[in-house]
Amino acid sequence: MKSPRHVRVLRAAVIAVLLTLAGGAVAAPAQAAAYRYWGYFHLTKSAWAFAQTGPAQFVPADGSVEGWRFAIADQSSVRTPRATPTFAALCSGTAIRAGSKRVGLVLDFGRPADSADATTTPAPKATCVTAADKATGADILVASGATLRVSKSLDCAIDGWPATGCGDAVANVSAAAASPDTKITIAAPKANVASSATKSSTGSPALVLGGAGALALVALLGFAAWRRGRDATDD
Image 1 (cartoon, rainbow, N blue to C red):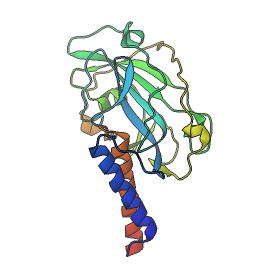
Image 2 (tube, one colour):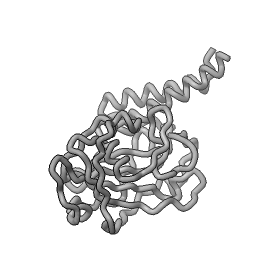
Image 3 (cartoon, rainbow, N blue to C red):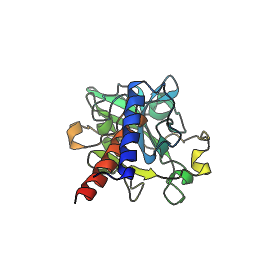
């Protein structure tokens, strides 16, 4: 028999799915579930847009810029990278090679308020990655030299951040975490990264849900939490 808590979690997941299908036009519930996770973005017309697909399914074009942001978000909010460096700023010093492409990459590890214990976060960084023409967003991340911690096809950590946890629910979002972001500037990379990135995207099991993006991720995590609770109750 399902406990009231598990029913509430499942209901929140269903609401998130309905919000996703509605394109986010419906207001989120007053007690929307919040999660701490990495989001995946594309820089479009000088603004970040949440990815419409996961990084293993998206193939960025030469001259594009990819972004990742660690933050707390719920069904009604999306936290984008706080810096928007142009492709020219990131890749002007990188020569193009036949059969390859250049893609700018921004990693924003978030604010202390986004971390589980309000500790200082790693400094944001940006670089230019040279990769094979068919390299996916997941390949670009791996080719940049970033290390990944993955669990059940979800990107839990990039370059060791966070040290623990994976898409954890946040019961009470602090005022600092809920406050608006302040734009930052990331210095142009001193040395660019070059890689063939011939490894298929299946070799890097990263899967961050895009599309109406954060909503779908919240639905997935909410449903997973309900399943874990239901299994524990059945036992």
